[in-house]
Amino acid sequence: MPHEITITRLIDAPRERVFDAWTNPDSLNTWWGPQGFTNTTQSIDVRSGGVWQFVMHSPDGTDYPNRITFEEIIRPERITYLHGEDEGRPRDFHTTVTFNDVGGRTLLTMNMVFATAELRQAALGYWAIEGGHSTVDKLSEFVAAAGGERRLVLTRIFQAPLAAVWRAWTEAEQIKQWWGPAHFTAPVVEIDFREGGKYLYAMRDPEGNDYWSTGEFIEIAPQERIVYTDSFADAQGNVIPAAMFGMGDDYPDVTTATLTFEDIGEGRTRLTLVGQAPAGEMAEMARAGWSTSLDKLAQVVAR
Image (cartoon, rainbow, N blue to C red; front, side):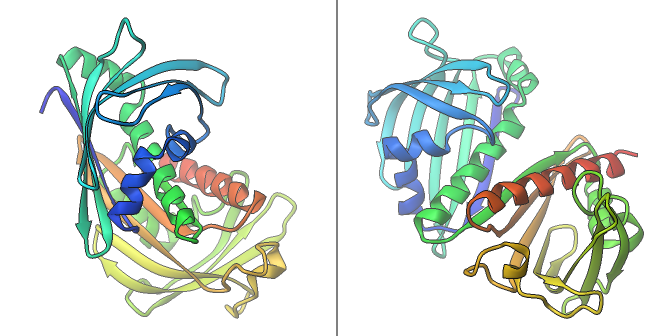
């Protein structure tokens, strides 16, 4: 619809936990907003007719006043609210959030309806879709942590067709062009892209040190999903304990990651990566590394 923006995500957590993350004031304040943003709550009353007045702080220090007026809260099925800037501007758009159980996981749908197409277009100019997906990334990580798990969730929208993004993940010569954080190269990419096939990649830092990884492709749904294992390795593909790389004694030597690819129209592709997150500062380092890798990928697929 010309006045709407809809964001959906299948979250690997029960819907009661996901719903509670939306209605517990401390939880909501923790995960709300895109990656890098924080919140200062001025007042919050999470009930039908209640108001959450808060300020979002961007990484560059810009403050964004927000006012959410909750209309309907039906646990654990639905939340509706008006979202504006302040009491004098209480409604920029109306949002309905639904929580559907899918075999113990939660299909979250956020439907935002704007009064006019012009208001929707203005929101797109502020990266509303990208910010929405980044916010749901944080929600996914939050509910995983609430369940005793640590997850890294990243979503990126590429200005490139689905087929191009898929090839960039599955063809060796393309992977070599972007694998690894900023300023790293990928001198070795060996890939047997089939279910049960394995890969062995090396990324090289600016000082010439090589870091190897290996794994196996568990599930491949062409141009939809890739599920694979991931481990630190040596040049022969032998698994090396993750603890040797500072990941912590409780970090598994073999982890599983899932990539989903979605054609979102107009020649654009949404990629979502869900993987295991290390603890503490290593989690932020992992996020930063993946983020800059995806920046490089964006340049490759835009050519």
